[in-house]
Image (cartoon, rainbow, N blue to C red; front, side, top):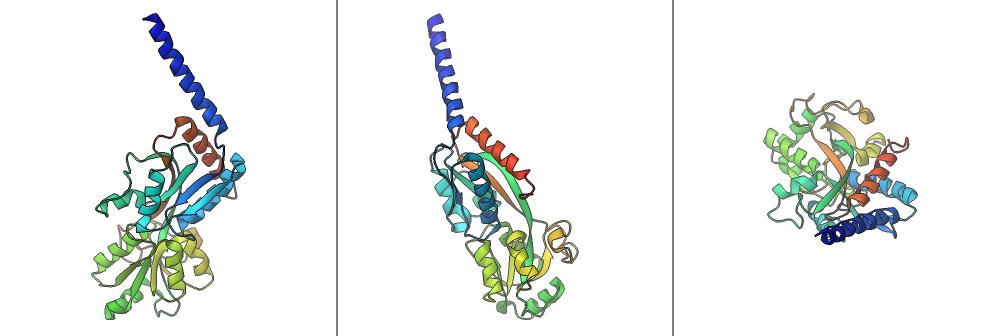
Amino acid sequence: MIHSIIRVLAGAVAVCCATVVAAQDYPSRPVRMIVPFAAGGPTDVIARIVAQKLTEGFGHQVVVDNRAGAGGNIGMGLAATSQPDGHTMIVVSSSFVVNPGLYKSIPYDPYKSFAPVSNMAASPNVFTVHPSIAAKSMKELLTLVAADPKKFSVATPGVGTTPDLSAQLLKLTTKLDFITVPFGGAGPAVGAVVGNQVQIGCTALPPTTPHIKAGRLRAIAVTSPKRSGAIADVPTLAEVGFKGQEADTLQGLLLPAGASKAIIGKLHGQVVKMMAQPDVK
């Protein structure tokens, strides 16, 4: 009996030591960071900042791998089936928890397929129009849409993203039959409105702000509870008569399920350290 207990304890110590060594050596090669959306959107922007900082902190390259499609399901499915050794990670948005309620089947289990590492960012969504549209407020825009709903479309980053849900909720509330056009990420959606291929956009604020400030887009309303400091002259949806429609686009970092607690802890520590840096804040 005593010898059996000693063998069990020895095995446990060996496993613990191996885990510690693995964490100390992590990462041992370049790391792939999957982004389940196209380049240029908020998730991609956050991922590239994080990838650069982790590269500096770890001394190994962290490479962003954009795998867009199906509202993020393609990239999330790929990450879910990757080896849980910490050398594949994924930056997800709010669609990670929304998609199970929107799709009949998805290639991952939000409860079992991943190990959470860290929350990273949150930003409101913003309704915008191309400058050629003769509307400077939500009231004026809805009046134009009501006159000819089939003439107007709203670009979103994809089905199930929070901007898409914001657009759908506005459509439901106003009972206006405008068309929503889901793209493979915020980058293509913003580009479609800037290029006047689609008249209206609903996207996360970060990738949209430069175009608003440059006059390539006109902001109509934000989905935050309070006005955003980035575009302080733009009212909230609540201010223009649509209360209870606040929404954020969130970003978080996950590893495939089965990743060791030591690696998760080391990675989380790097993210916390990075988020405290002035150039990231």
